[in-house]
Length: 400
Image 1 (cartoon, helix red, strand yellow):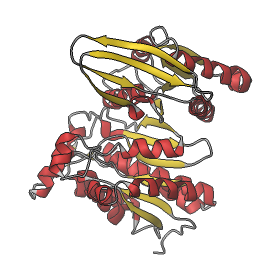
Image 2 (cartoon, one colour):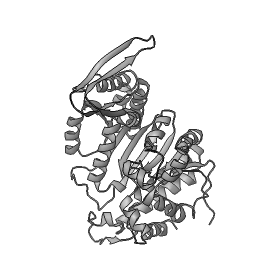
Image 3 (cartoon, one colour):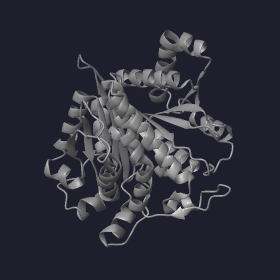
Image 4 (tube, one colour):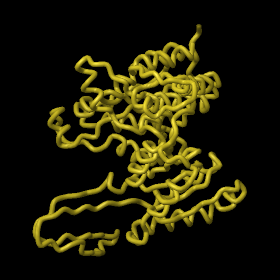
């Protein structure tokens, strides 16, 4: 059987721990037997990032700008324990944060729905798509320890004029954090959210906490409103969908009562937290797609979860694991589909569709990883737990 042709390479960003193992198996079992796979490879595993002083992460983002489509494996963002464990030179920043800042993109995350897995919130019948701003806030913050003394926020304009605001007058020890965002990035975020909602024909809800953060969050609210009124109001009305701004605690209450079918736009930290909550409530964090979309049409696909450390430690001891690879499979299928769309190679698009269908059909047919067995309830089907490699092989049978 001849393999499906690719015109242009994908940027391939390898990762860490158990997801790195799944990454190689997915390529071996599900992609390379069917596709003449072309990638420009970057190793974003923690060892290589330390070896290159994290230059490899920057290089991968630059390559993504060049080729337009990337697929990324989950990676470790090291804390103090990881610095010691891997004997790192320093505590490197999140590779996702670095890539997002360089691409100035918005992250869209959506659950993978399967017949037989009912969300924990039974009213949810349709996907809830989380749109996460992928720049700034706590991920680009400057923080530090404080002793007795005064912490101040100082802004110096281009003419050298200074504005000083007191943050807190410490009578004892504490901590201080300063974060930022830019009007340019917020506008890009707003346009990406409005465009994505129009593409999906879903209403867009945007939430911050501007009643508390009157200037910082208030700026997000004002920019979204300005962009909507000037550029998207007529388009939304024509499409028959709404744009709504409200406080984040109000949206949380509304989301829980909704049936889904909404794009929920969140600031960076809110989107990080809420996407995990939504994914878990739909059934499993391993069943959540994630794509970073830049304003100039660059796409980076990844799973929405981490490196599955606990399973990796079992794997290196030689113990079998039943780690769910579905979100990582969908990262590959999403990247292959977009590559096919941009290159006008319909066979590649069709293969991506077939891979996703085969994955869902395998689960709906009763073959799945251990995390899904307890969630799966379908009349006439008894779920069977497979280890990770067996599950990939079951999918491959449906691709043959």
